[in-house]
Length: 544
Image (tube, rainbow, N blue to C red):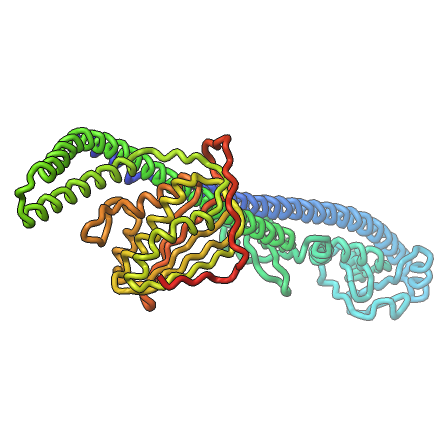
């Protein structure tokens, strides 16, 4: 018992197949989401690595260029300083021998390739040659034996302290436009500007402020309306700030978002579609299972009913026959019976007959139907049965209308088909004891015919209408409830069906039987040709 309860609870807790399928697709979407975030993280890490790598490379380039520029500048300064110092020593020597005049200094400057020479005497007198070679006065207080560059005048000036006491200092100049231009080109601002013009680089600059976020030196910023990956790298020169173009990074992220959304939507649609298919299949399988269970239950019920019927027929029919024979003998051999006694014997005989009829109907209902099909004219069967109920229709004032729009034959068992038509006609007459109408129509339908009987006097409730055709259900006082159930079995034995349609407003009921033109079953070799319908095809009215 406990094991059964556990199995039942486990069965209730388990998901249906479509639910498991949908859950599986949900897990797939979750995995895709995890992969998507992993790829986002990987792309961000790649951006950080690339940005830091390029920033470090630029820092190394800047340091190397600055070192080379300083080395070259130092070399040039040494050469220029040595050259100008030698000239200054020579001029100092000449002045010791004989004081030099401006004309001599001018000639000497031209001869040696100098821009000009100044002799600053102790008293402050300046002997210059040429006179205007140095517009801006350079004081002797500047560092001696060191080259001083003037970017505006494009000159290089050396101040040399004279050995002669009469001379305070010697100023000697050289045209240095090439040297000044070289110094400018190798300067740090020019180098940073050059690096900023490289493809994929928005800007490169040096700042004296420390790194803003040492833990994460790379961040996405907007510079001049452009998405930029900015890296801050500490260097001996200061904080190097490098802005790299992040357009490709953002485009890749957008493409990854688009692919994720499309793939997730596709997975979701596929999950919903396959879950719907599984749900439909599960429902169809459940419907088939329930139909099979109902059929199996009906078979079990029919088998049990058949066994019960056989027992009843065996146990009850013989006593009924004995009672019936005894009543007949009593009637024949008792001439002194009064009229009241004869009426009692007649009622008892009728009761015995009714009991035997019920047993016969029960046996017939439980017996398996095996139609012996042959070509049958439904109209001919109808014409053979109608005269049997003509007097009854006349007595109950029932108006009968026939609409035979089908002219042909179908494969059916004539006896079973006759029984079906007679049962339906008898039920229609019995439903209208106070008079009414009956309409009979035989119409062709795809691959078969539709036999419909409509009668008035239908006052059944919705519950009673839903139970029509069930075995043993009847609204008659003396009915067995097997007539319509037997009609359904006959229709199903011919691969057809039986349906009911009520009109509460008109108080009428339509019973429709659909039969295929070719029914499965044993076909007899002897074929009885149907009799043709009458020539008149209009509605046949019979005021019975």
